[in-house]
Length: 117
Image (cartoon, rainbow, N blue to C red; front, side):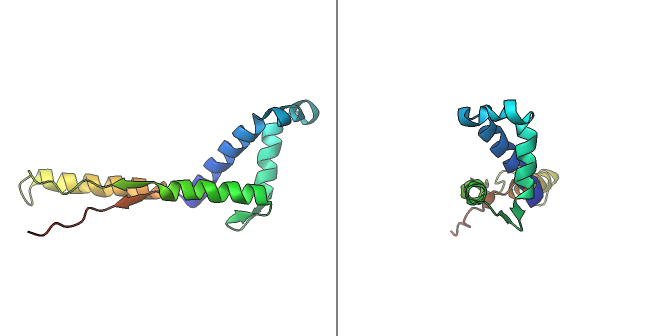
């Protein structure tokens, strides 16, 4: 998932939550489709990797920090497969694909510490 896709998810969630606030629901009567209007305002407020308005910038920072705080523990290597066999190769490929997908969503994967005998 690209940084742009993550940002778009943030903006959709931020607009949904903000538009549901009682204090802002009355704006729907004055401005029509408030969600669409607010989504456009949010996009126009972008400044590089952040936003001009402190409220939006802080919410964006918190969104990114929440994703960065999630660390998925990767399973250890497959101990019961024949070394170099088809099952082990498939297992390793599955792990690589899983790690790529998790990291693409903005989260981290912790690799297990190598055990020494």
